[in-house]
Image (tube, rainbow, N blue to C red):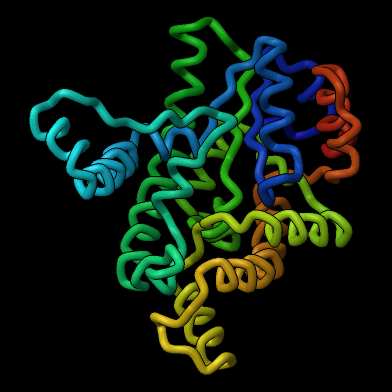
Length: 285
């Protein structure tokens, strides 16, 4: 770790952290708070949706627009411009593009198309994570900002191997930033599931996990691919993913960084609180 102990962290002239964990536990909250205190805020999901998947997203909009005669004519004559408006707080264009597998009549995608988009996301997420290192330097050399926070996506644990001491992504990140897991409790997990049930969203999954769950779901319910309710599938798979991701997050923290509790994150109000929170997670000496 770049900060070996509490003293290293507290006395460091520049503080650099990467926050990871399930979405909804405070990564973006902390990142936005630190940005307001002069830190550079790098969002992996934003980078994915703009730098690496922006064209896929825009092309998907255009395909839909071409189905409307009025818009088709405007597009063909270059009279309108279609693009996504992704922000740190609104990643809906990326989620919409990823979609959900299942019945097309219910808004789903054929499973083959869904897997293709998942593959695109995996490639993009790996690249966006590795870009973090370059942005640490860009923040310093271009903007003169020394303190840096990386707000990683919930699926970071799906694109790295936390048990491999030579994992290229984790090696590169840990050389520049302190890896911090925001660990949720069972109560947090239950709330995340309730929140997801109310508004199920697309997610990224490891290919082997997704393929196994796709078969298991359909076998248990006796459904053909075209009969799958996309929302019901992603609700069911989300619960399964929460359980599968916990040990992967835990291994990332144990082998590559530290962990803090989501309950304690919720109490952080300013940069001083955050500095103290991280200090408490590091060894005393």
